[in-house]
Length: 83
Image (cartoon, rainbow, N blue to C red; front, side, top):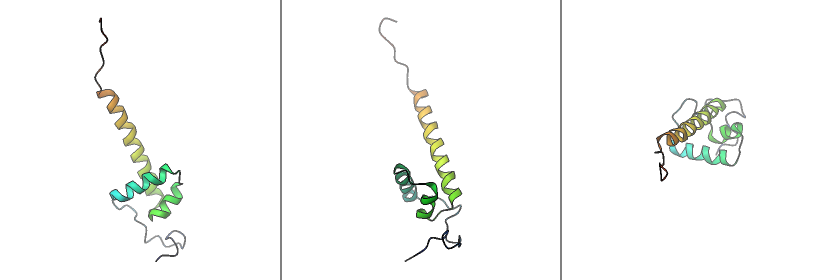
């Protein structure tokens, strides 16, 4: 059992820097963000580099915004009676 995080003891060799994010990690990231946990704390909990977590949050945020824009654009216009 670990008693210190990699960043706390200065050893960053245990961090998952640049590694693919698993579905479980993405779900946990989302949960932690919903509870308004800081990026710094999320990085510590997921044993990820702060920059990697920040980049993933930006990536997911952009995907969500783009996804909602696409949904609005692709919805058919509703016609009103009498036109």
